[in-house]
Length: 324
Image (cartoon, rainbow, N blue to C red; front, side):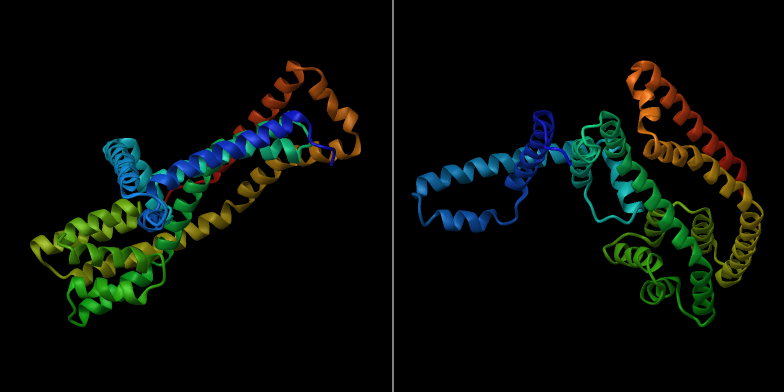
């Protein structure tokens, strides 16, 4: 790897300095060890200077709390918090924003270094740093919902058996929280905790549906809420819902088998041009280099080709995606 030029050093140094500045500002305000630091400082400075430092710290904390309260009242902040919960990430919105800033800064820097000074690779790193965290959140959300729905039939069977044995709905939910694997156990444990701090069962179940956007779960929660209001045999209703969900899963499996060829074809056709481009670049770099030596014309051709590849991939996946 060639020696780093001044531009590379400037990018790396600037990115690291920016991240350290942001991280230091956060830690100086939110550090839980502020009291210990003050105790150690008291051994070396006077009480008047210590009181001045305490006043500055309180002013910073007050400003930080005001900013937090204002941010939490915005719809954007609440949506971000909901998305993080749906993804199963134990991050606050501010921590996620900090990670996005880090990815945005370090993405092009690492791309420029790994690409040995290539601005194209740096641009790809910028795109990954800009859109990668959002794609990761959506991927984790879909995976968590899929895991929850895969356990839903067993959850319903446990609920039906418990209700027929004479347990109440609350007791059945507690048994699910203790006996089912994650993420089902985690979500129902949170329902139990919310009821223990004073929320009604209906409110806790509404929060569950908000955290896990599943149509099947919404159907189950609706049945429980109706039974709580008008009565009836909840076990029979849930047994019918369980049969419906099992049939839907079976039909989805058959459809996925029948559409496997179309989905795999879309993946192969999408990645084949990219693979050929990389292979030709290894075999004949001068041939591929014409795209980058012709300025805006070469970059426009690459951009149009990439756009067509992405569009074709999503169209083929959309054709193979059949709702049940």
